[in-house]
Image (cartoon, rainbow, N blue to C red):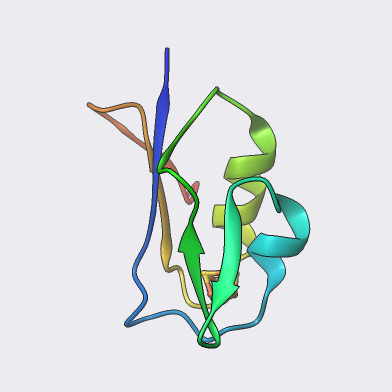
Length: 71
Ligand code: SF4
């Protein structure tokens, strides 16, 4: 299974939390986060990043269900 990860750059505040938690998947560009690739192996760190985003700009899905941010 592959998870899909996206960042809404319009919502992103540029805090850098996601890039600090999962630098292999997130990077800051022009003071906003962007996803490297967009797909990743299931990893709770990605859910932690989505949960930690102060702008709720990160979305993690398995292609059918929204996994993160968690309610
Ligand atoms: S944690 Fe959220 S607000 Fe902060 S850089 Fe990542 S996407 Fe942007």
